[in-house]
Image: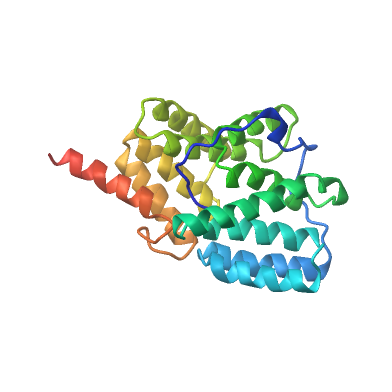
Length: 245
């Protein structure tokens, strides 16, 4: 997953269905779980192209398998962010189209990880980051285990989307508060740390932003200035440069 800056307008009918409280329990069969673990290993390294190709091959074997469709759509959408505009638009549209259809198939699975991922990524790939935040608030009212996580992701990315407008700081503060409530000390997935770094950078907190980005890099075994992190890394460098003028 990566930050996108273009604003996207959505309507109420586009919103994913709300689900019951979740403990993120997976009930997939062994082949699907092995597949999930494999493609996730490439996503952690930012190698979305390889992950997409693996998912595409899996779909050739079973084109209706919901896990394969979801992972393909997710990875394709993330890979698109590294591509030229025309190809990015084409891949994004394909990703969003698959996720939209999967929204109507959520009832077919009881796998909480899959349900969560489909809903989150339907917002995410459309760049409806404020929608992720509102969805997180709704999930909080329903007692969902990852409600605060959704709020942190949505507010962070919305802040980056609006930056450098003044409204960005309000969203960034909401993000920092959400991540403080969520607790990131033992978080091993890079994306929440990346999101916190983005929010802190928008607020101009260079030390906190640097620490969060370094944690994102460490847990994903990448450099802080890698392709996926480069926008936030550049924002932090600009803060440092401003402090020296």
